[in-house]
Image (tube, rainbow, N blue to C red; front, side, top):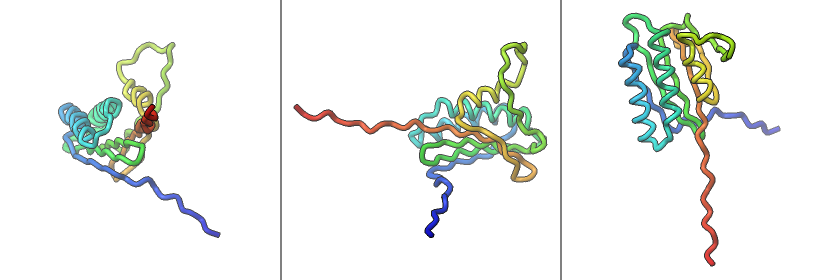
Length: 151
């Protein structure tokens, strides 16, 4: 019997940068992501918002004095994956659902934004003592253009 083994998607493009866990580092993460995606010829509006929210969370909730965070962008066929690796594995994000009856909270909207923009997101532990918060956005597929037949 011939069984085919599913292979993980091939990463076609990859970008990684280590940044200071400061507001400036978070802002730089978004700017570098936009620049990198432009160089790849990739639509970047939602991806840049996702990077901005995840980087802000890494700085606010994942910061350890003297430790940086890392931004990774991975492009596979049809998907952009954003990963933010910070130094606080003990502070994993909690999925919240928007409740119209609750008064507006000061914080907690970032992950709701991520949920709205990303097709999938989650958190994984490691590399120790870090955690990786990731989000995946499906790339739009463009139908091939058909030229109408000449009259």
